[in-house]
Length: 105
Image (tube, rainbow, N blue to C red; front, top):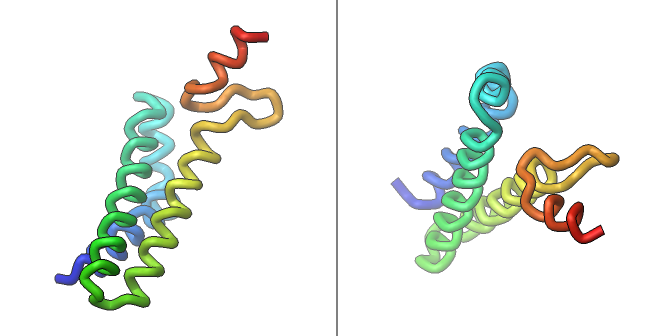
């Protein structure tokens, strides 16, 4: 199987995870922690993006590889907006920069 198709499969898993399997995702968020779904989603984005870059370097399925890279970047941006940025005064789900800003004021 071509690496671009593996990246595309990982992105389909991501879309299914945030749509059809959202109840499972919420169960994990409520009863365990925010970190397992966040790391899973970020790893899907990074791995699929790297597989797209590999496909682009090998010049196999250039159009699909480009789309896989683009959607991988969008998944990483989704991670940043959902988990790392505060919203309307509410601290972010994963406190990384907010805690430093809070103490510096």
